[in-house]
Image (cartoon, rainbow, N blue to C red):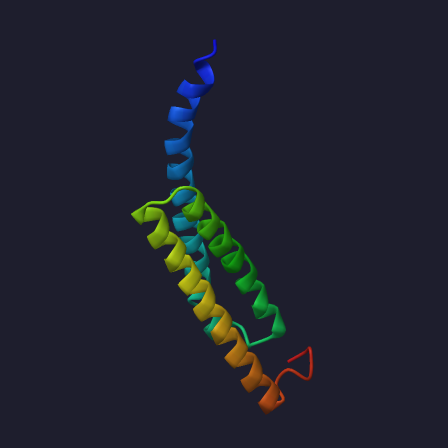
Length: 110
């Protein structure tokens, strides 16, 4: 009975790592698939900033997981998600400033 938690821990940690990698890769694949047509189909609005929140949250979670479970794979995924979130937020910032300068963001309708 006392060995059960030790045996479960030996199997749960690799399972958690596999689930984390699958979740991170799956989320990025779905998000990027949806974002590729965003600039074509929708005019820029402040609501585009909603894209940055799940990216930033996943980057923070990845960094925490990489700190808790050091390894080359976790580090690469964490840095890739951080880079993606940083580039996205920088692009949104630039696009917001351009929209403000052009006066595109003054009205909420087209």
